[in-house]
Image (cartoon, rainbow, N blue to C red; front, side):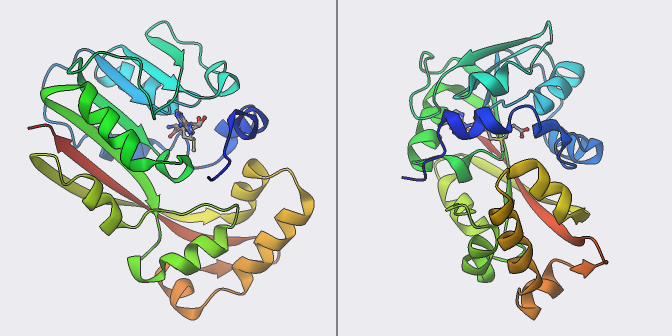
Length: 240
Ligand SMILES: C[S@@+](CC[C@H](N)C(=O)[O-])C[C@H]1O[C@@H](n2cnc3c(N)ncnc32)[C@H](O)[C@@H]1O
């Protein structure tokens, strides 16, 4: 049990959009650009959060429904073409084979049972429907344990290998990486953590990382901050 309940997200909701990567335009272009040029309707986003991806989906593809366990996160959404619903990825309140496109970004590291969420998504996709997925991953699968310790908070960041395994039921799978360069650790900590001792420990852990992590993440340091490249693994699966 990871314990990332609604309460955790209630505390993060107001600050969430201030984290640098959330609305990164280059990421959105690459991510949504993985989709074949088709008409998609209906569309669902699982773990929609504050609607950062959803706003781009409306602009480039069409209206959508979004589901999330946190009412505080979805209360940040104010868009005529987004329909937010309170609910859990473990048990999607939709009929089988209903959606033509389902999206999910940066949710499964907070989910207790990723396999169950993936099978729910698969169930709700129509035949030939698409699942467009993105997730922050360690810079290399070989340093997964160090990465989890570094971030702390009892989170396991899935490796690329684990994600590919979750996609094994899909007919065709395409993958891409997007590297967010030179991301501020202080910006990330200030918008993800309210406890000053936890903040200090996370900063100390970043200073003490291995040379391998520092090399792979392009680590640099100034007097007041540290910077690393953050890897997003993006996958597009099509249902059989
Ligand atoms: C890191 S945020 C990502 C939000 C959004 N997808 C984005 O990329 O900006 C993770 C989101 O997943 C939601 N979440 C966590 N566990 C969930 C679950 N079991 N079912 C639905 N949503 C969940 C959280 O409430 C939060 O809004």
